[in-house]
Image (tube, rainbow, N blue to C red; front, side):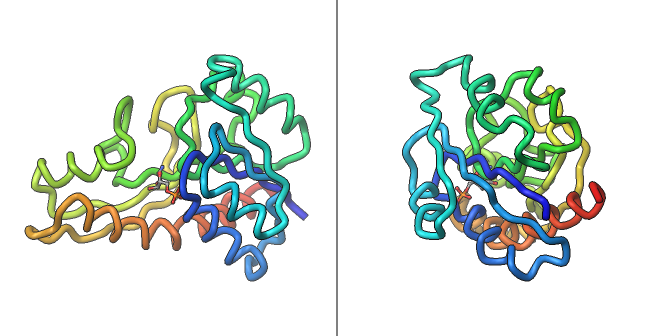
Amino acid sequence: MFKIAVLISGGGSNLQSIIDTVSTSKVEYEISCVIADRECYGIERAKQNNIVTKIFDRKVLKKDISKKIDGYLGDHVDLVVLAGFLSILDEEFINNRKGRIINIHPSLLPKFGGPGMFGMRIHRAVIDAKESESGCTVHYVDAGIDTGEIIEQINVKVDPKDTAEILQKKVLVEEHKLLPKAIEQVLYNLK
Ligand code: GRF
């Protein structure tokens, strides 16, 4: 059975989508731990589901956070899933786990990605640019920010009357479908 680690910084609704679908996945896997870089509600979700949790405080560890997480994970997991994880992992961490780290991003990459593009900023930028569609992307993580190979995307129609808040909600619904599907696909390819 494959093992995954899920890295989070926030509410953990994407983590919840994995928890809710893991038992029906066509590729057998388990969430062996949830790691956060701060106290957050996602950690509570993991605990409620008896998943091992660990917090590596980004404010305390600063640049050492990648090394600490790397040491903690060792060879115990097949895939690292970044699900709303806001710390930047260093190149060594990423290169050591090439093809085995994925990230979910709430836009149609390569549009609206890169440094500073996170959270509501993304949706505001999409609305300001008067885009007719947005969406979400799961991609492999490489040394750049939001630049890794795209695994899968879902498009979301932007209505002219949509606010950034409405768009965020619409995209999040699709993220919850996309992430479990992409995990399954990536693990299938690791077989
Ligand atoms: C999601 O929009 C994800 O794409 C982004 O951060 C948000 C995290 O939401 N990277 P949640 O913590 O999973 O609810």
